[in-house]
Image (cartoon, rainbow, N blue to C red):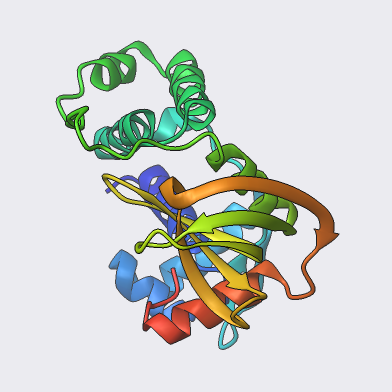
Length: 231
């Protein structure tokens, strides 16, 4: 492996972790010695990478350090194309348009060889059959905006038995499945975290009020309850 590729792998490894990672763990994952790791970290810091930490304390990469997309590997490009194609097929129209725009921007700055790799990707996302497929509703963009702003929503919801209720919820996550989208939110009516299928939401009224708990704290509480490991 070239030194340039090793430095890129080091940056990518640090990006995957939000908390400090020990030098020993980093060196083991990259298959290099601690001495080489310390030298590589010094090189990246000299080039402007905001890496905090020291031997014995661990290392973390602060936000803001950007590498050019020319460094994408063929497999990374396949993962991007596959993910974007899934969004185009499964998400609401605004998110689908954003996925197309993102692919176009990435493609525009790639060298010709990688452009060819991207355009020739054979990883496909199957189209859902029209009959019985629950497409993303018109409410989904409103829900996504409320999640970003950490604002409450007033929703009219119809459960699986057809009973309708009005709920004030604190949406903090949106799960995408093949045939449905599910809002994860704190429900003021139930005083607990609940799941709401988007295709059963009859109405949505955004509220100007921010919910009192941080979105990250709600997400962490939900993950712990569901036994989902942190990402």
